[in-house]
Length: 253
Image (cartoon, rainbow, N blue to C red; front, side, top):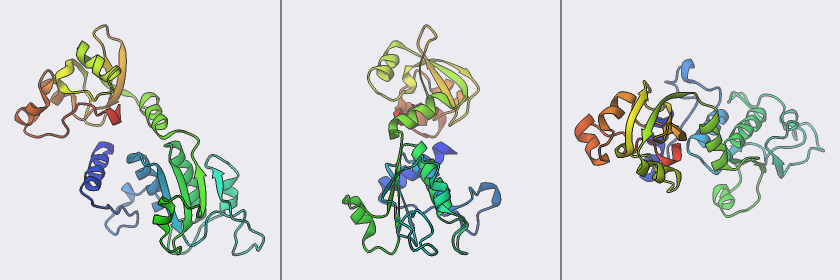
């Protein structure tokens, strides 16, 4: 599901389409809901490896207290997304039109930070807000991530997922992956172990059985056994379809 959603969104963006993903869709069922659009936005931020998550609301940003009740409340311009005191400042639920208020936005900022993305919470009533933010203007509250984006994603891939199988690579593929920064192509695989599916995490081994990389497989174990040692251009003829030309894309490794 992760790979399918990621591929679909990236393709839409390449085609110049802006996808709109909404938690409050009338056809959504409880089984696939994540709770609120703020959380959903943070998950999509991770999915797309975005640099910045922008959340628009009816407030100028995060205040030290509720500005509707406390005249001494002060707008915070820049904070650490990991700061535990922010949750208390955010308070409880928001309007009757949504399922969460500032508290869910602060939680989303923390979740996005774990992916290495900064978050900006600002008022949706600001004119030309997004172009001004893109130009570097300081608006609203910036939640600064504590982890570099690339490092966060690589750490997630390397340490938090169970291995479902392994691919043994030839010497050329090992050099391309380890030293060349390349994706893994089917022609470089000499053996397949395990019974993994598309999107599962598999280890990449050299001829001595040492793990040199790991990543998300674009094809199942059965499909990989059929296309290994073959060129990417042959995948269509062998399988009757093409998910991706790579067995593991570099971004998912």
